[in-house]
Image (cartoon, rainbow, N blue to C red):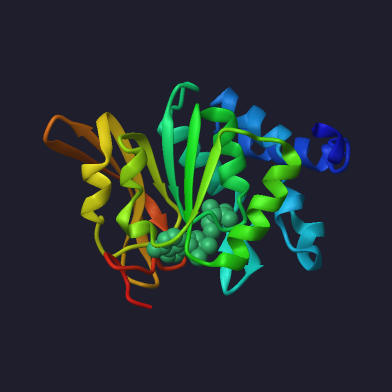
Length: 219
Ligand code: SAH
């Protein structure tokens, strides 16, 4: 399957990105290894593809953006995945983070509300041959109850507050990463479930596109 993709292409640029992330303090070797291996340029529209290995957010069409690599790296490091987890991702977008997750967890469930983005992401991931990802077109603020409970829920878009479905669909000890705030500025939050309690950690100020759905922003 891997024959469809030339992994040597951009290999040097990818290696330099990994070094930049290490210099910023990223230590999780499995995350660094996944970034070294996943061809981020394939998830980026051709017009801005030459910038694929800069540490910047880039437009992916339909008014959405792919986050900068250091944000993805930070997100994934915070989850401390061991390879055994079932992970729910809200906001497939380009599919790049989905591909990283497929290397770091056992099973990935990813929901996107914009059909054009989901189709594209699915196509690139199919070329890569990952077979532990399930996609759904729909409103991610409802979660994906059929496949719950999840060990981790990553929300790649910002909400005013945490949609309650996520808490209901979280396994014991599971984690939710979600940017919460207003439409322009948010704080990345990490919630960890201990029994009926949800421990909360504020991680860092961030800027994400809005999470649009029944239990979040309406448009
Ligand atoms: N991690 C992705 C982030 C893409 S931006 C990447 O790096 O490419 C966030 C995505 O969330 C957008 O594609 C947007 O369409 C999607 N989104 C927003 N609200 C959503 C919802 N309720 N359900 C599913 N996806 C949603």
